[in-house]
Length: 369
Ligand SMILES: [Zn+2]
Image 1 (cartoon, rainbow, N blue to C red):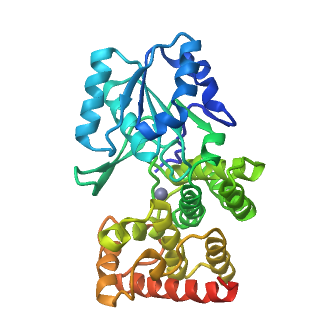
Image 2: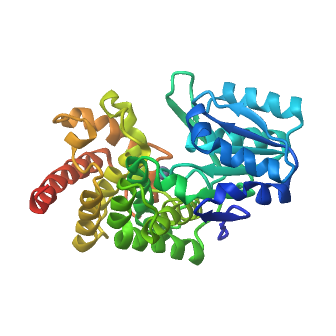
């Protein structure tokens, strides 16, 4: 397998970046289809459409129906063909961005993502996560191309929900922890090869940025202010984590996170919150993890307010039998847990989850929270 790194063609981040959207869009196309929901349009619509108008770009305004389903992508494809759009622009959260990406790939037009929250790895990636009409996760597709432009308005994100930024930190914290184990075993990455030195350096950088600036960034966003720490954490959540996960590799942290939604009690959780618990589980499972590393991750998660116990995930004293449903999927064929250099059994995953919960509870006690 070759070393492969994939990335978007251009990444732009800064205060009021959306006010210059037209300047960036006109380099890649003439007729942007803008996909967003009414809430997002209410927040950034005037700025974005005004900027496009200033540059003489005629926007096709499309209301997003709420989930990245095959039906929704087909609808957007129909509009792209009907109106002759040459760029699909997703503005909002991961589901909107993933829908725009899928529709653009199918119609061979350019892709722009404008995340208005920094909660997942979607903006830079070449992947779309699929849901069925009832909102259940049904899998994902990896497209042959990453977005042509990722335009991040950090002012918009700093005024958005704190919980979303914190969830993004949970997703980003996993990147280095998972990429490291995948590199050791030569497990493949989503880019279709194995990791590069560059992807590893980016993944590690993201981890360091979070430890140094995460708490400060959270405090700033709680007060709706944009500080250098917020800029750095946005970059870690979106750029470092996005490149690091896709070109590094995934492991148990994401596998456990992907299984948690099978419990109805966990439906209220954001992806990054589930991944945060997955990180601690993975560290409790991994023989190679030092205790310093384990405490560092748990204490960071407690400091920023990520869920570290079953109770905080919404699970009240789950039995081994219940947790075994997750363990079995993790130990199954094709699982991301195969990235480890040892065989991951269902029992070991259950033990690690219980150990993670107990560790989270004890570190919370010690921290007095
Ligand atoms: Zn993730």
